Length: 520
Image 1 (cartoon, rainbow, N blue to C red):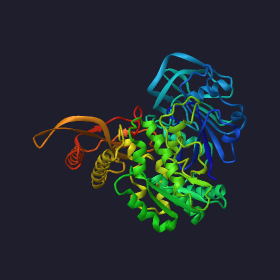
Image 2 (spheres, helix red, strand yellow):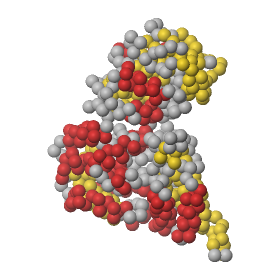
Image 3 (tube, helix red, strand yellow):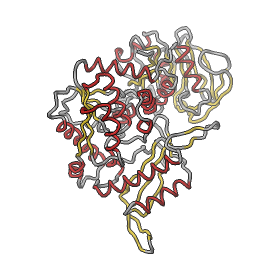
Image 4 (tube, one colour):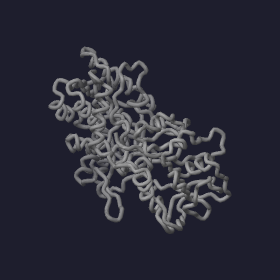
């Protein structure tokens, strides 16, 4: 098991960014709620604790607080924003509300060399109202800002640090260096969290969990389920059976590709089921997005159970759940965290599910999943294909899902994907100036909007396709992709001319947040 950093989440919108920065150092980290129990947060592999920011005042009723066991552990602690304030309050310092808040870019002054911060004046990202007015006993001031007399603090003998600013945000000038100093130098973590180590640990964990049992793998055709199936197969061999349910909501050519890639690996342990007509019947007349997801999730389980009814008993079900699925479905931090959407493979499963879940990718971000797939030797085009939601094209159709509407969005999506591949824009690239090109995910959405058009000198009243392309590293935040105008024009022209029933194409330029990546 790799060295571990535990991040205790006090409700900050930036908590996941802390995790991504640490993972980029090849150090394993885990996000836990601030009230996590001692046995969850501390084990023999835990090398340090990071306390995230949060939206509350430490004096608010029910405000998160630092539990005694964290102080008693003797482990290095880094408090960020609210985390610094909570640490100060816990150890006997003073935190007061300020009449002058600090939000956005701020100049930080670090007057002397120290183990954590880059010396000198620098720009950092602040986002706080309360601030520290008296340090706890044993702490010294590391830095100041115009409105924070103690913008950073340190108790060096006990390896306790506090930052009023956010080093995880890229606007902070030396943010990466600060986190590296804490994780690699102060906590003395060894960077052993690599794709190979992830595979080794996952295989070992699967074998421990499954024992001599048998596993059914839910193979959807996407990257996550494909890599999950491959990992389980490597762990237990022919005691895994993969089931592919053709929902009728797949991308163009997807069932055929699954057959081509996995039949040689699994042989007779690959079961292909065409359930498309049954799915369309269940979705008839349904327009609410959450209801669609729940119907699709329950239908998947029912079809799955029917497909394996005659097989030897299987106790376990493998799914391609990844970390963003978990976070978006139920939240990691404070108990009142908002659920953004339900995922059929996380929060929308029927209560009578008879399998124990095997989820080897549950703690991985998307880029880590792809890296694992490469090491496993899966086809490059499968590993790096565009992400695809579990409910398939149904969540890319706003309104009722019918075979005709699915075919429209399927064709539009195929055109968009083809043009992006030909232009080598299906993944992001960063030049020497930091400019980002390409896309991390791109797809077409069929809107419940008809508009007037003119085609062949005749009036039309037809469907509208929205194109969505984003750039993202971790898929927790995303920006809209600045695709070339000529490519967008070419895609629009092809869709209008090649996809029957469409006369208008629009481009979505929303970021995440406030939007999500998918439309439903």
